[in-house]
Length: 145
Length: 166
Image (tube, one colour):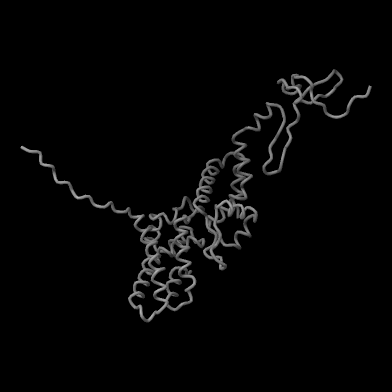
């Protein structure tokens, strides 16, 4: 009887872990946004599809950006975040290492370097456009108290 | 006979009158009493600036007391307490410019910025406000762990109060 090599399962590409995926998705969406927004602002009436993608990108991330914004602006006590932000977005931000978990009540949530870069990038993209009719809701969704 | 005034160094090695250890030639101070000359180690003296200076001189038995690791740690903590206070204030959410100038020492804030423990706001609106970097967060986390474990030890309570008060 000959030795027949057993069939080997085709190797699947190793999926990114959840937290890396989430962080990558956030920065990816910001990169796409930076590209699309110039296209859209040049001729808004010609880019209805771009507009849809643009606002999709913004609304997908905005809950996480809100968590980052709150932590960055000093609203970082656990009870404040429970009140002002979505719990699942907070969990996602911690899993993605954008926010460091608190050690005690007086030593609350803190933003990491990765989280700081993300929220700074978001701020640089949105802040010049915050008075614009199209972008104002997204600015308020993240920064409103 | 006129004797020279002032302290004189010993010309040859002799036992110290205070601690009994031998003083090498030229490193002790000779004093002339009623029953002859005695040699002593010089008194410990604070050399250099208030912040980076140190004690010099003294008997070897004195220096054992100075080289206490706990005292050194405490001195280090007290020396850096203003810097730690900046990190603590930023970490606890009071990271606006107004808060920092109200609660912290301006020099310590500048030191924290130049050593990349906190970062400045992006633009003129001062938004987003001051943040800890990862280095600063690690530092203040370690500080908190070290000091909170020793709160019962004498002196550490004062350090804790100096940094976290207000």
